Image 1 (cartoon, rainbow, N blue to C red):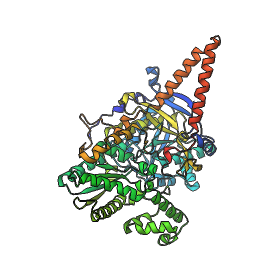
Image 2 (image 1 turned 135 degrees about the horizontal axis):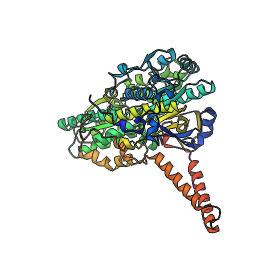
Image 3 (image 1 turned 180 degrees about the vertical axis):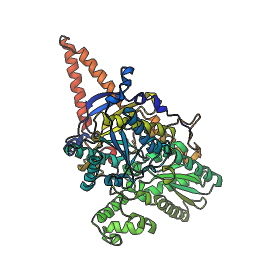
Length: 604
């Protein structure tokens, strides 16, 4: 399509030279796990924040190219395919050639397996011509989503050494960037010169923290799904006799489901985070849905649309426990046919209660990160099956007098992954590609490319790099207060913030969504015209200027230093000391919460 790259007005595209500004050293997202992270990553923990700015002297941007040595960089698609991934490669290539035309960019064919086997494709203008602004990962492809075992890390390092790479760019989500951090640490320890940097590309939107406002592909996937959902909503109200149960991708977090609900206004949304927090059982979830069906029937409405995330099934306590037992047996190499006989008695009873198709899907072999294959578990069909049974029961008991309940099930997953990326994802990915090059040129390793102020126009975006270790925490395996950090430090999926503005907006509209049928039809993705620059509602509504808040804090600290100087009055000095003691005490308490429970761990 015809598309003008708005990112050209971003500071990183004003020439090959940028100004690198180093900030303070970083800690971790969870202070209780900081020591464990520091021990696991002794060479890359605590690195400083980095900001990339336009040169002070515009003439400096014209520095002779031949004064900058050519750079050799490799790029690999490690995560699931997500719209916009190709533009990361495009931005990286353009920045690389602007830095020095003799620089070389290698793409690894077949994802991480191509990295291990040193199967490369040199990325050139001609190679990129057919892939700019296109969906999918078909330029290079992908395979297993891990660089984890000693053998895999060793193979990756050998490839980096054989190609004499200055940098390796890993494109992916939570798991891929956790592996990128470990690879960076290992290469530093082995004195390998290759710098490893990550790029947040994931349709799930769960790689979200104080540095990462959203991921590449999330906007596109939500827009495509919202169009499909709105079509189903109109079909439901037209026929007036079906309930549509729609399952959406998103793994363990409900970001896609929440964004799609705000865009399309379905009647109900069951989020995993709510279920986990309230510890609702499977039948309690079913009863809540049935109560909604009954309330609508009293208004003469016998149709509706229900959204659920694919991770919902793991958020239900008894289902989570059953899945964990099955996972342990898988890890112990117990044959699939024997697993049902080796789970605990209560788990066996639950397993037998479930419909045959769910039993079969729960026994599927695990994903590369040892989690259940959530995309292959038909949770929407399970809910529809149980809701129908409950509605029949209520009818027999005289509690429900409406029409017979009928359901239609859908899984909207793969339909959106290969979509043409939205203008926002095109710009965002292209800029992240540029940042990746400048990170490598600055000698950074174990960092992720980040952009702040994404809800603003492109020229107000703030380009930066944050250490991957600053996004890490230690997985907890208990739900309740006082949970003890155990396991290996990693970047974990970030769930919906149930205290955030986006969730608050959903709660305000929940009753209207349920009863009023005020469906919203956003239509297809727009590339030109009034709707072409629309961004995710959950992105625009939240106040996420973390870097701006850091600068504001520095400003006030500098003001204190300016006011409280040797020679100031004793009263001023005492007031400053008293205030600092109070602030320090409050921050110490906040940094070590008594229940040691972050929203991050509702699923673990």
